[in-house]
Image (cartoon, rainbow, N blue to C red):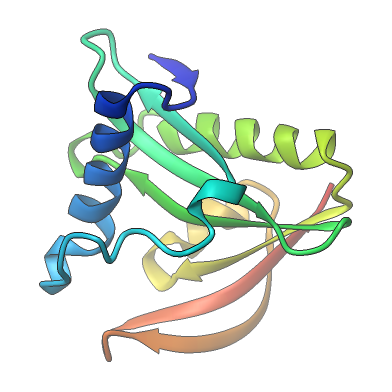
Length: 143
């Protein structure tokens, strides 16, 4: 498995499809809901398997010169526990450092909190409830 960035139209389609399948489809959200108006100004990262299939995806946006935010983290549900998420986090954090960020912020789904804790993030506070069912927590890590 390798860490890369989507380049071709087919890679972008596969990248966004994974985000939709993992983060939106289980809650009956429409295609397109896996994107927002900041896509073109962000750093995108994905892990592809040996067959070129997208196994994981994540996005980094700069909220200020010193604060980066990780969004849209998604790993194929059949591939959890194989280190894919850590590969993505390492790549996104490295890019944040390269851009001058001093810390990284994210909104974690409750089920993902243990993963982010294992990556060195700390819970700031309990925040919003997505789709009336998915509790989120603000988390932060100093780089």
